[in-house]
Each structure stands twice: as C-alpha cells, then as structure tokens.
Length: 79
Image (tube, rainbow, N blue to C red; front, side, top):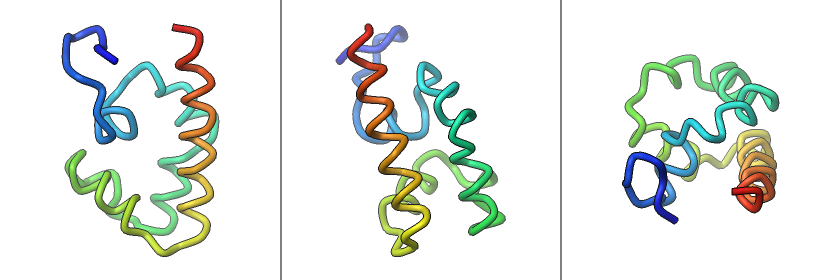
C-alpha cells in the first residue's frame, strides 16, 4: 500500500507511524497499556518501539498488539 505521504506502508509504518490507525491505538489504549509494562516506551524512537513490541515475550503486550493488528487490517479494508 502507498500511504498519503507517498511512503510505502511497511511493518514499522503500519504499527507505530501511521496516523490512520491512531484512533484504534487510542480506543484500545495500546500505548497506555504498554507504557504500564515499560514506562520508557513513549520516549523510544519509532524504530525502538517497533523492535520492543515484536521482541516482547510478555503475553499481554503480544495480545494487545495482535488485537490492534487484527482491527487495523479490518479498518484498512475500508480504504
């Protein structure tokens, strides 16, 4: 997919950069929940946030991330 700013929607863009999915992140409280587990999460660069999420062994983080990805793909169909 090509996003509005003409960049390619890769995995990092999809998970941490794309503003199209911010409403889902807020609705699911993804960042707030992850910050509870890792207080420095919001201070990380987008790259480090992406790496942290995908290298996590915490079942809660993986569950929150999985739910976000599932719902984001459903939302993407509406484009």
